[in-house]
Amino acid sequence: MTKALPLLALLLAVSAGVGADDTGLERAVSELGTLNGVALACKQNALAARMREIMVDTVPKERSVGEVFEQATHASFLDFGSAGRTCPDGKSLAGEVDRAREKLRRAAGKPA
Image (cartoon, rainbow, N blue to C red; front, top):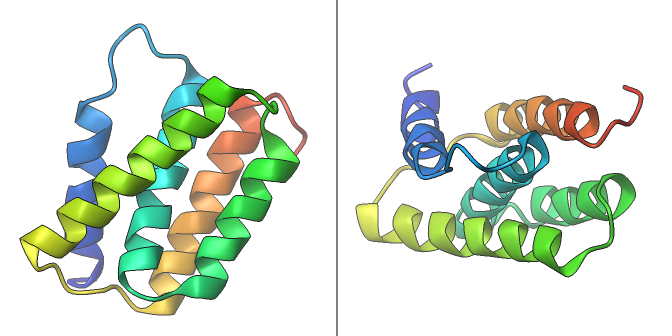
């Protein structure tokens, strides 16, 4: 549980920057991008690849959607490294990815 707290704090910090005008899809893409940044920072390459697959399989193939994902990934990766956070274990991070995937599928109007 204590290992998940830094990840939760990071997710809350990034999601606080999401404006009221953003759609549910943008928020869900941003959340997955944030997790992708953590996975990359923690060298969880299989999870990072899985998140890219989730994006390709789930969201519209639009530049703006990809940019939201990339910006969230970049910000999360830099923040994680500069803050000196401890990497969550792979199982916890995979669970977060599963939850984010379901949010993304709902936001994109895809069946669970």
